[in-house]
Image 1 (tube, rainbow, N blue to C red):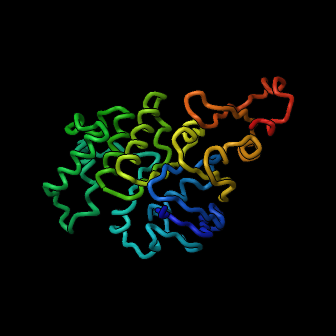
Image 2: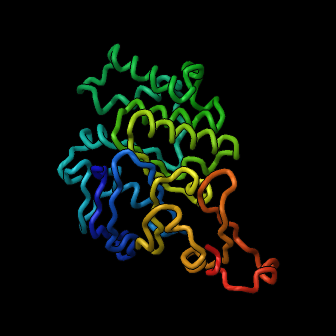
Image 3: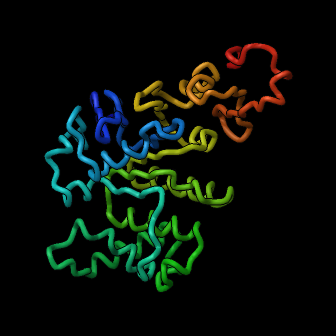
Length: 274
């Protein structure tokens, strides 16, 4: 299988503060890939670099076999769509107007929406179940609806890769599952590569084909959920004790943090959990 993204010895600093340190990994085309790790580990910075928002000096990144530095901003936006963790709803766009912004990388200098652009936007809204919201102002809809609208805009961009920074963090449990089901369906039906940051390790384990665990700007572990989600790894990274068992809803690992008051119930080594 071809690689959608290849990263080799990538480093990044804000002034003298190192955020990423010689990171290397690959993401296969058409997979659901998750980045996990504690706060401040460099995950959002990594996403912004892949989206072309931040410029790096050390290391190499290839997108679809081509150096990211050889893409113009418009050309990169045809390949990569980015949905940030927080999205502004201050501007009085309608849902349809916001989704149509996804067509910008494909338009000429005047940015006039063609019949084709409107058709693609309609299809993106239909896919994300936001078509009924098309005439509503973006600041007049719920958080779950708004998140689907911003994903609709990314779908309208027709990228090969979609980057999402904590897309489910502000949603309730039902909306989290619906959003993740939507992303999985998008991957399965279009072949798009999904790269997502998540603090919810259990949610990530249920949907990810592969993942990396980052701490202090370094890749600690890469592999399947089975290979990454282990107490012997997580205890040290998150500085917390975990019980890892099987998720009864699916064939994947499930973690439960062990509070101090419950530790007496687990006097044996957590590394014994398989």
